[in-house]
Length: 469
Image (cartoon, rainbow, N blue to C red):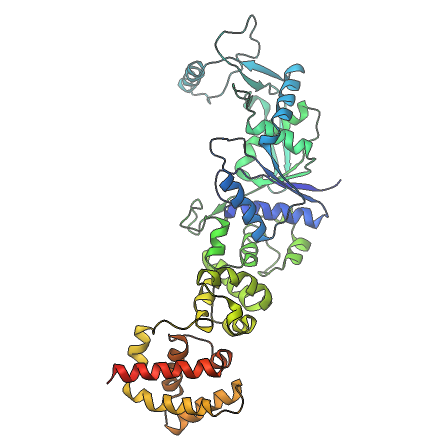
């Protein structure tokens, strides 16, 4: 059997981490088995579905690298097909028109509650006879089997059994003819030959209803895998304060997509004690039976740890591609300064996010606008002028502008004056970067170049002289 999985988000908001993990698991399972990954947009909720949300989902999928093989398919383009299936179910006696008013349904449920029963539709229109009531546009209900059970061999949860007498006759088409979720999903999964439905376990109660509709259509149900929800670090339902934000928000906060992918795959799935997985390793090792049956917790600190790892170990070209987005926010054009790959190499050990890396690298490409006040107060004194001037002269006299002679000039200047190296290095750092943080001084000055370095030291010397005049 050819493996075909799908990711079917509703475009009523952004692509969040729960949806992204579902997409990842579906993508991995298809890739592992040489199958097909389908993207389907379930946009039948016309009031809440927006083009902005569709764009956010597509953008999030692209940023994560979860390329789909077919789609995106839109349910709003398939209404004729759904109506055809509704009519087929009616013709075959598997569905019926229901004329119950809202008031009648409310009264029925209230009576059931009074008896201590579970509120549910009692099937009163199943056997309605005579002419249809006037002025009441009917809904269409699926005639659920009254006996037997639906047995689901869930690939994550194990065997789940639902008795049919606990399931009521659900609505499959509203009074305006618009099909409902459980009908559209069934038709889409059938038409698109989906072999494995991987989705959140909040859909478990829908599954027996969908299986019964598929059987009524003479279709073979797919295999199901319901993955547990993601919780916040405190064990409560995941919310914005835990990190349940748009996937693209993580891009804005300076995360590499590999870091988020790696964290998501570890939320509920593991392979021994291994933490870091390349995409190829995920594809090779991932399997649905290995997904944990209990809820996983989203850990922002662990995500940051993953991000540090990928900043330090990814090819500089890859980091540069994603760093460019953050440089653009600072109006930085990396082609106007030192080789951005060398800048990344010098910065990658000291930064946790691309936002930090961009902010701390702006000085390589733009004239600094001022000096950090705390750093000035701590490191710039009147007696800074002489050693800084001497170091400047040694730099100017260097035969070659390389890291080793720059480092030697710094050390010798400090030693000649019996200064702690930091007493000289920090003023130099402030001069060239504007603040107290930069890569090692020899690397920083080498990347900036002789002309820029000398000009910035001259500017700081003038600043110190004016400050203490």
